[in-house]
Length: 257
Image (cartoon, rainbow, N blue to C red):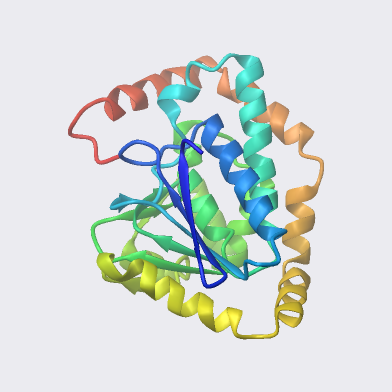
């Protein structure tokens, strides 16, 4: 695979996002991640999954530079695949822990909040959902997922502001569960997931699916109407103008993402 790496040891799989400096998500990464997660979920020889990134970046979110040039067919396919990836991650039946190695806004945050537990590296990093300021309509399935961890009131406020949180703020809000030294983020995540993996797998998995029943239903519901709204707004002149400004800033060396 071109955008991710996977290692398996002692029944534990570790997926490392590996695309460019900041792991921006494009169509290829979304497809590869979906395929690999599906395979791991159905492999009886694997008992758990850690998803991580690289130094300073878990994932900077969507690759707006590439997505900006997608035609209507390509962007529709991308959003369809992204929502399908979210659904697959939410319904993943085995233990899954995010080892957040750095910045994790937008799409990176979506991947992280699909997991059962989140360990984030200490540092001047940010995490959260900032889709609205970018001009992207937030699907209700993502709101359900965000509010599952934060509570509806806090999730609503943060989403509507597009607020990104520091590591300490994220811990206080309940968006992440633990802070680790950057060099220990994987080992800390492994310590947690091994606790899950020691428990009876049938009992653990079925309990997880039961507790996520409403999340799973929300992510698997027909999202055609929402998708159409997202695509329409994506091509709106004001959105294109905002995206153009963001992209110019992303191409500037001073930009942190």
